[in-house]
Length: 166
View (cartoon, rainbow, N blue to C red):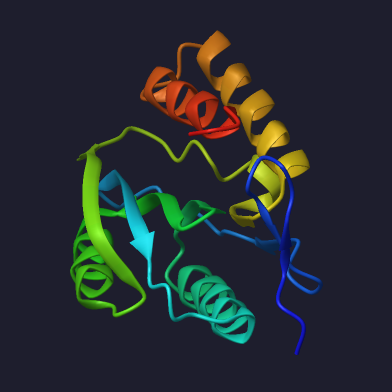
């Protein structure tokens, strides 16, 4: 099978999973939080491994009412997760043990008042192309303009991902 190709920004283009969308039915009685981390991708993963990971992420997050975004650029993952505090803590512990990740660095782990990503492409998105990353940047800029919590942090991080040699 032909390996995926990367553009000059280093984004890997997949034939099947340009963007995965999930729909979220939010429950306002939950204690909400956000977790944001960055990790190294296991270098032994192949295209089919990424497709399986993205599909599993989509199914699991949909079933657990988790919103957010997963970005893969070059050999790194960046993920923003939002949802029930207990659910996210359990999920993050599983992510830390997952062989597909290494050198996991937690950037944000705190309570939130509302789910900020439930409106971005209908809830949960997997991003692995530059065009969709620019859409995410625009969406976060809108959050920032409305003084939504954590939007400054997310905007700065997305800006760094858009730099050619980040």
